[in-house]
Amino acid sequence: MNNIKKIGLTALAGSLVSLGSASAGEMSVSGAINTTLVFGEQGIGNTSGRTIGTDRDVTFSGGGELDNGTTFSMSTTLTDAYAVSGSTTTITTPSMGSFTLGASNGSASYAYDEEVPVAYEQVSDVITTTANVIGNFMDNNHVMYTSPAMELMGAGITAHLGYSPQASDGGAGDGSQASYSPTWGSGVEAGLTVTYEGLKVGVYGAEREATTPNASTGQQIGDEFNGAWYAKYTMGPVSIGYSETYLDGGITANLENATASVAERAGGGIFTGEQMSIAFNVNDNMSISYTTSDETYDTQDDALTATTNDDDVTETIDAIQVAYSMGGMSIKAYNMEVSNPNHDDNAPDQSITEIALGFAF
Image (cartoon, rainbow, N blue to C red; front, side):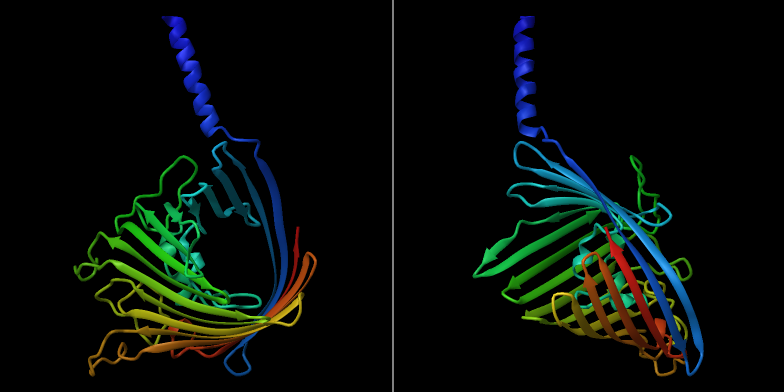
C-alpha cells in the first residue's frame, strides 16, 4: 500500500513539474548615463539658475519560460542612490494575456498620459502638469491585466484593467504590505487602445475610494476620478498627436487660491488639460518636435462675490525639442516657455533650456 502511495505521489509530482516547471532563465544588466546642462530665465532678465546635473540608472531584467508556454519576466531600475525607481514582475500566458505587479511604473496610466509624440522629454519634465499625475495613485500595491491583442475589421485592440486594494500610491517592501492609509480605499483603472494602420487611439479612466471626511469642514470627500484620451497618427517621418486629461480630486470644499501655486488634489476644483504636438524624423538619427500644452485649473466657484477663487487659471507650455543619436550616444535638447507655472497667475513666465549628453550600455 505504501509503495502504491509512493508511485502515485511520484506520478503526481512528475505531472506538476511537466506543467509548471521552468526552463533556465536569463538575467541581464543595462543602464544609462546622462549629463545635463539646464539654464533658464524667470521674468524679464532674471536668471533662475544654471546647473550641471548627472543621472545614472541601472536596470536588472530577467525571465524564463514554463513548459506550458507561460513566460515570466522582471525588471528593476535603480537610481544613483541605489533606490528603486521602478520594479515590475510580469506573467504572460500563451492565450489569456498578461498580469503585471509593479511599483512606480506598473500602472496602466503610463500608457495613456501625455501620449503625444516628442523628440526628447514630456513637458512635465519642467512643470508637473496635470497630465503627468493622471492615475498615478495606482502606481504601487496593485495588479494590472493586459489582454492579448485582438483584431476587429483590420484594427488591433488591447485592453488594460488594474486593481489596488489600497490606492494611496504607497509602496511595499519585499514580503511586506503598504502602510495603512486612513484616507484612501481601493482603486480601479481601465484603458483601451485601438490601432489602425498609422492611427492609434487610447482612452483611460481611474477611480479610487475616499474613506474619510474632510478634516476641516466635516464634509465627505468624494471618490476621485481621473481620465485621459489621446489620438496619434503617423505618416512616414511625420507624427502628430492630441491628448486631453481630466482630474477631479473629489474634494467638495477648501478651494485653492487661484493667485498662488495650486497643487493637484490639495483643494476643490477640477483640473483639465490638452496637449498637441508634431514630430518629424529628419533621418534615422535625428528628430525634432513641437508641443503646446494648456493645463487649466477650474475652481468650480461661480459666485460673483468671490475675490480670490473665482478665476480659472491656465498654465501654458510651448516646447521645441531636438534629438540626435549615434549608436549608444545621444545628444538631446529642449526649450520650454511656461506661462502661469503651477497654475499661479501671479507667477512670472519662465524659459527653461536643457541640453543632455547620454550614453546607454
